[in-house]
Length: 126
Image 1 (cartoon, one colour):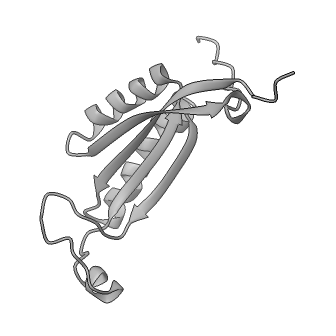
Image 2 (tube, helix red, strand yellow):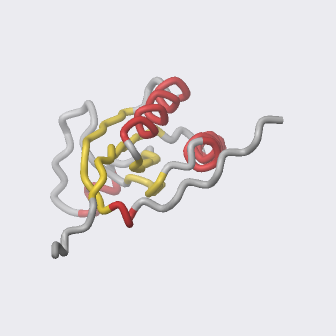
């Protein structure tokens, strides 16, 4: 008898969006949630705000937290999610069309089938 649980292949996606203003951030969030949560029902969605890091500029070395915070005029909106590869790829393509300037990375992973919650039933066509 094996104690190993069945596993599934998933794709993780991380999207980094530049935030130019509070009102623009709210609009971005609404667009993202409409696609990821309401339309595709992706699994494992996390949205957060990045406070610092290295992007296209090389001055990413920070001695102290104060140094970091003083150099972060425009935080980034970070979106992370995972799902079955086909769904994650569809979501990634939709986000790329919506936000061509976004930084998007993806990678494959494995999870236990029990960690994938059931997808809501599709709505009947009107």
